[in-house]
Image 1 (cartoon, rainbow, N blue to C red):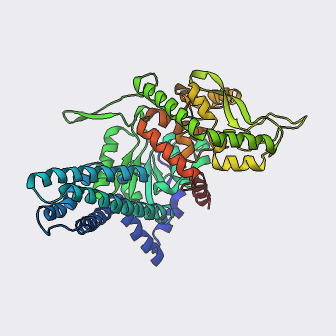
Image 2 (cartoon, rainbow, N blue to C red; image 1 turned 90 degrees about the horizontal axis):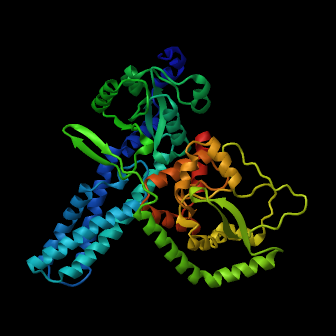
Image 3 (tube, rainbow, N blue to C red; image 1 turned 180 degrees about the vertical axis):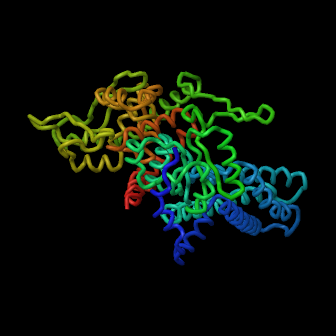
Length: 508
């Protein structure tokens, strides 16, 4: 049933009021930030940076002017730009990762430099290897810095509510509600939900509780009118009761109106980065390739975990000894804190940490109940953290003894964080897909943690991020998580604080 239009009359009338100058400027900047326009801006900046890099590399060392080497330097920008455009650019995604961007830039610059060496050898120009190395170095640095600046500017702009891209969601069900929750709690995606389109939305009792600020503007037949009213620049197709041929027509309608379209695929919980898109004639076919935690790739992961843990323990032995002594001297009690945790396949083990709290006094109730919907962690109950323990937690050095758990084969360096048995049993019964996390070994750090889900944060969000990590696992993803973890430890990145700022902004 299509909701009555009367309930949205006030919102619709307000949309027809003349826009103030500031709103017009914001709309113009918002369109500049849209993917199609921004890709042209990125292309122009890439071309400028490559020309500068090629010029700097050519004049960085004395050599005959405009011989074979000169032509190589002139061709390098166009070749590198072609390679960048031929490969899928990670900056085209909703969330830009500088690590992914840097790898993309380095790959394109490396391939172009190798082709320059081969071409220089064939042409017989002077110093082709030296020039190629300089071209590679300057291009990698110039492009990486330029991309970092562009990504930072775009991210900060898109966090502004007025500059975020207005987005319509077709399907006011559970998945649509989940989309709204994610987009409103994390402004980094740059999408601002402005309305639902659904001829049969979810009942109000469960729907309006979480998405009261996003109205249902009608059914899919009202798409063009809703786009005109809200100024939407993107439409997301979530699950709805509409037949597929109706939604296909809506996609074509969006294309005619110049509106970008995204969709949540069916069986989205089974799709990962390993999925292969094939075609049977004109029919697309997605072949699923699930992660196998019992396969050879994970055997390599676990072998590397133990090797890295052993090397780290040897290198950090003096520091660990000093910390252990300091903990013993700072307050009565053992240096190491042991706690039962649930790991892979439900196996229980003792996780090791440096003790950061004073021993509880007599009669203190050790039971702790986390807030509803939240995981335990951080300060639970009375704050007994010592001054040394506060520093250890702030630097994450209290987690270093878990390298021993990794060496024993009880944990991995990267993986879902292990939980205490009583909470694991509770969450397994209450939270959907919680037990799927137990398919792999627990980790010292994980995808949920580098995305700000530490301490007493949403357990449902943790489960979502942890299962995403398992579905899309690769050694490259592990490396990325470790680099993000080091960045947070060194205060180069604070995802938890950034997510909290975004959440606070969304509530204003």
